Length: 422
Ligand SMILES: C[S@@+](CC[C@H](N)C(=O)[O-])C[C@H]1O[C@@H](n2cnc3c(N)ncnc32)[C@H](O)[C@@H]1O
Image 1 (spheres, protein in one colour):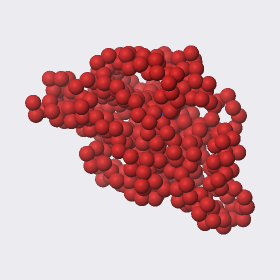
Image 2 (cartoon, protein in one colour; image 1 turned 60 degrees about the horizontal axis):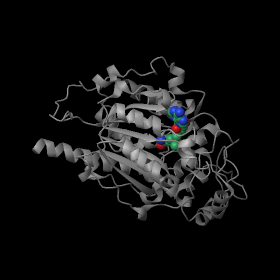
Image 3 (cartoon, protein in one colour; image 1 turned 180 degrees about the vertical axis):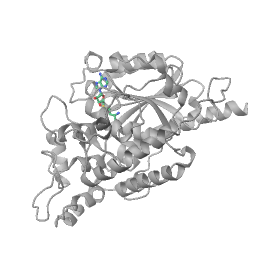
Image 4 (cartoon, helix red, strand yellow; image 1 turned 60 degrees about the vertical axis):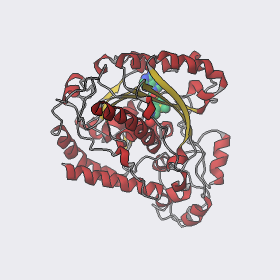
């Protein structure tokens, strides 16, 4: 089992390396462990709503946006891998410290809110967290999560009506990628007056669950002066926690895209002294041309080499597109212009890579967009092109999420070590 997992991890790292053009150094202090260690106690108490999913739903044979070779590989390997996972649960009997912190537990636990296609979830998994639940409203996004990680407890529901009480006291971190439109310029920055604002729902869940730490991702706009009172309100709701806000650029973490995103972190008081925001490592970041060259040549495009040289910068921020708009494209006019300077036609999303004699500017495929977001190549997206692209564009790039998750994990572990020593 361990060997199988190591092989899967190696494949995943190779995919990351291929994407970023270099091996992503694994943070030593934050070594991810195997993702098969489900806590039996938690698993028994928190019943998965996916129990009655049909086999077809799990494999996603019609809805999943699969590339041909991946589809073949997954249909063979996934069920076997899943059956191994379910026989490898831990016994759930952890020694407990006086503080109530389980000791010798292999993994810290996380509850994901607004999990989308799993960008943030993948980052937390990479940092060595075990997911006890992932809440998401969008059916296609839930299918994506179920297909890629059949063992995950995906809860398809509206966050406003989610009962978090079964998770109370069991979760180390609540992580959330709350909808951005209430705080984005494109969404008119209505903040708390926007019905899509899910901060109240998330704060209420956090109060119920009382995790040791919280990570919430949102757009840069939430740091605007107009939201100063609202930020203070959010901080005030988290009594007993240290809180901090930080703008992180995805390109500082090996992702070939600018993508500035705000991270809000809250840590139970007493733990915060060991918390450091992740350190930017911008030097290894590949260009769009380097990242996408192998995908652009998939159908033998003769112009790919010239295109690679032209696409010698990182990408502008990918946008997910709104459900209100029609088909997918690469965003507003300004973004499309920026894509054009990289030799990419932003007017839509292509079904496949350009053919041998293609002339002009190619469009991105969903898979190319996923690489630009830092997803590994074997991560599949459910639904048609529009639904799949929306999930990709809305995601928190996994490498950035992993960097934040590692920082939080290190901080919580440091406190555990102190307790043991004292
Ligand atoms: C910014 S995206 C999350 C991205 C995700 N964390 C990731 O890293 O891939 C916001 C997500 O919130 C979901 N969402 C919107 N309203 C919701 C609600 N009322 N309840 C649950 N999820 C909701 C959307 O479907 C979308 O997937």
